[in-house]
Image (tube, one colour):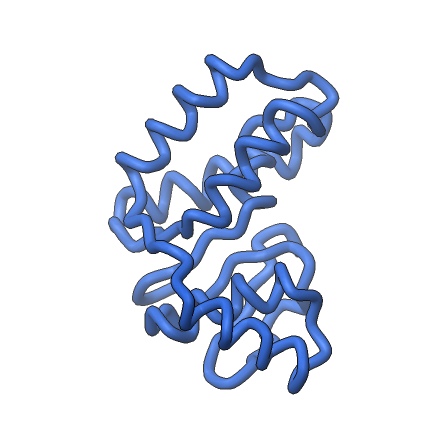
Length: 140
């Protein structure tokens, strides 16, 4: 994988999910590689989603304090891009033109408008490309 890569919430969360040991191992390997190459990017949306999942949806949820420390660590590790008004508008266009859910479209729009060519995401078919943004499933 070359160039910057947008890391979706599920990849980050699997690093904490002890109920999915194979995915946890794979997520940790992928994240380690991106950190070594300094190519990982996250968005403010992804960080917010991560906090919610870590504290409410894991089989063994983290405390709010643990989740805050995790967010701080990730925000020091990855480049963080903000969701802007232009991203929201582009996401709405993505819903209209590509039949994506709004939140999926917002991830796509974040990558597109920040010129990030690859999104690591479990929920899209690996290798699919939408307007120049390629989706890769690191678990499949």
